[in-house]
Image (tube, rainbow, N blue to C red):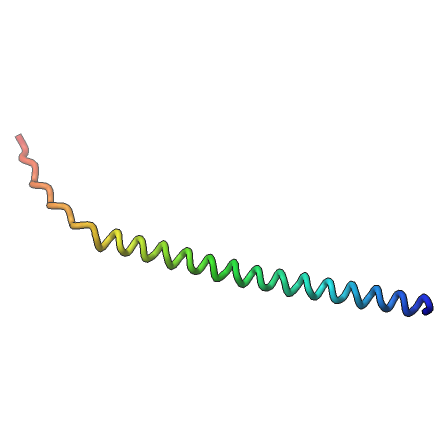
Amino acid sequence: MNVDDVVAARVEAARVRIQAAKRRREELSAARARGLAARHANKLRRLAARVSDETPAAPNPPKENP
């Protein structure tokens, strides 16, 4: 095994590590985006449920001027 073979093996190993890290970052980013979308959807559902459960308040009677 000569020096060029050793360098080529190290370069290839580095390339594999870089690709694995890139793939891992992409997967985490996609999972983060899905989680964020799910949290926003849940928040909107909670807000809609709260608004639909609330009954409108009775209007205040007009004040009389003395």
